[in-house]
Image (cartoon, rainbow, N blue to C red):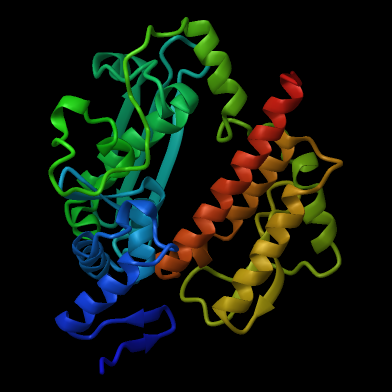
Length: 343
């Protein structure tokens, strides 16, 4: 009989034999990602990589993909791992040259005690790499893919100790088909995502698509965007605590003007705080009286107001919040595009 170690993150095997049996059980389950179904060896490798970088077994299966026999990690998971590092001071992402034919994604990775690492990836870079206009994510989400390329370069250069040499899935999936092994070899492929070359679209049409799906550039007047959060906290607001180690879990919300975030509520456990955060984020996303664009801005500022809390979370918990945040933005983006293109 095997004895799996029970932690607050779930079951974790304590010996190699238990890990192998655990991997075999997962491989026969319909609840693991399809890329791992029937492949206990790949599951074992993914779990080991997860253990080395701070992900629980199931989190590792959701966020690590084996491509050409080499593990890679999704961009949001890479960000969570780096932000959980005690050496991380800040990660800043933005775009330069918005509205021009050659916008550039920029990622600034700041490690404590060192000069910032700045990585850039432009439309021209994507064209030189043969990526711009390719069918698949580069055609559907060009800005997101540019952001992931810049992020991957910056995080790997600034925090190799946190990522253990892993590249991002978004970068790995851009490898040309001829560089991938033949199907006869035992690998774990990504979900079907053809990247056959197509004629590059006209720059103007592409930029209109980018602008329509952009989230990070929506930073206009925030008073209307944050109205729901401000109204909820108007009566109970109190000054934010000084930065440092969090002894209680404070849920922060943006305030009017330049006063900075204020405390909406306090909680006695991270689990209770997380539930309150997600509840308020859902309420903000579904605030029908505000436009989709304003709700995106409100969500972004709500997230930024709670960065001190996120930085002290474990990678797995931070990753769950990041994935929920990205899902809300995609839903609002879909609503916005539907309104612009009702047919």
